[in-house]
Length: 445
Image 1: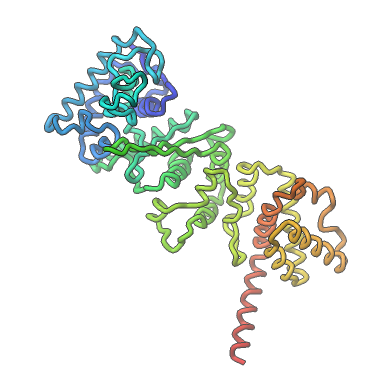
Image 2 (image 1 turned 120 degrees about the vertical axis):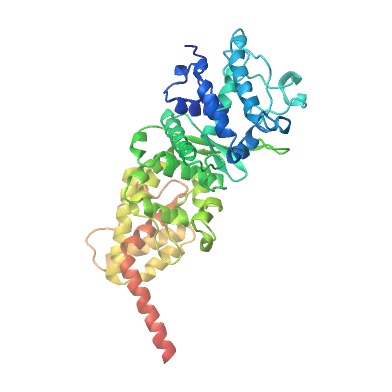
């Protein structure tokens, strides 16, 4: 057995290795014997030569053996010769350590974009270091990249490569891809790679993470710091391009817990609030329209405002909100429970004393001073009505709100309003109906 493969840190090479490992049912690239790949080459050439998959190959290896028009009628044979040629070149490359991917072998023939995406063409020598005619990849790494299509996700006019430092994530993703490709082969119903109609790469990243990687297996990832990166790119024609999106570890951890909870469908309520034009959001719209909840999670911006609306409706549940605050925003458990308790106290006071104007004042507080004054007035009202306990103690107020510059008061306002709306939902609905009935009677009069 000749062991030549190993992970390199290069996303294209490593992605190809994950695809090959799943195809051969091995757990480590070192278990792959390069001289046992003959049958895999035949299967690969058959798959890539189908009309649907050939469209994907155009995005990756333009002017290569499978796409160059000069090989018309013999694309498959030329491609198989190319793969076998790379195998025979591996021994020739063993003497040096100049490969820019693995750093373990030398370069036999520098490669260009027809073999490695986004490496440029040989005619553009100024693209490469030392004005060379190609990039310094060894034959083994070049060969590994030929398996990259097996783990790519079609995303509009680009393709998405999933990359993660977590071997669990990559193994799960490679397995999902293999299962779908195998279904295509068995049914003879081929698509352009793994294609579910997504064109928005950010939405695709959350879909892949939640519905394909974490589905039924979320508990496997508890306690692991996982980040996922998506390379959304094309190597096609005159305009190769790439965008990179990162799913941070706290967001992945949040999704792990949400996926295991009974409230996942309620979380999707919050996600749907991220579409500004909600009238168009059907299943197809979800795949292409910009979602501001997802964008905010990727860009480390708060999504608290999406849990409520101006009609005093709540979306999601307190449990989901609590998970988000702890896992993504890093809020302390004690502080969170104090805010929850304060929301419960205010909700009970408003309901018991029919004091909805205090809720309106809390909603309309536009700065820290007005927000603080509303809390002061509620505390004073409770004294007047003879409540046995204070609304909060000095220490609790400091723990919840005071941070020197009071910068987080808006965050506390959002949390309080969510909790109050949730606790008073039925009461607020009945109040709204009563007001509408009164308005109708006034119109009749």
